[in-house]
Length: 215
Ligand SMILES: [Zn+2]
Image (cartoon, rainbow, N blue to C red):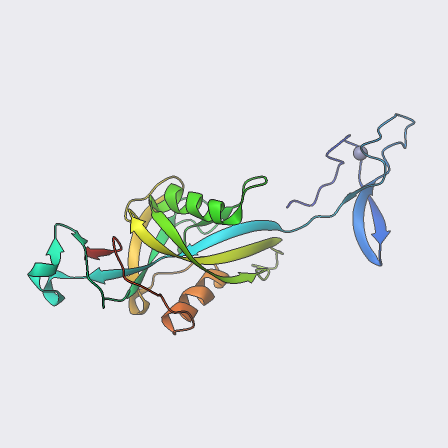
């Protein structure tokens, strides 16, 4: 959320207001005698903006290490036993951190359900169809380069059931990366979740289905 200078309702300059011992910006709304009931005692709370990010474990194999009977074109169907060894990352096509990589992520739309937002972002950025698995973590990111980041990020783990290998809007590229070949990650919060996954903090349950492809 931006720190407003002027009231978003009436355009008057916002003034410091103390509420419960904390300073906020507020608009009295009737300084100049106008009737502006929406603004009277308006407080700009500057709440964090909620974001979602999706960890998509996938199984990345090469023709060299899988018997031919298991593969067909670039997709696999497995009976079980195969576990993911990689995650889906998108290369950022826009600032900030353009050119670096991160989990599929984005801001929630107005009044949007957070899991619906995660599904939407996975589709928009990586053309990925996903199924809910688990809410992994929630955090407020630390300041970056001295600038506070007023956000709340919800991290989901999801099962990739289709796509996930073609860049969509805002993404320059999509890649599947194993823990020992990670590219430069744009955000420390994403880096931590990715590291935690590869360090075994969370377990992917069930089979990989569409989330297998030849490297
Ligand atoms: Zn106002």
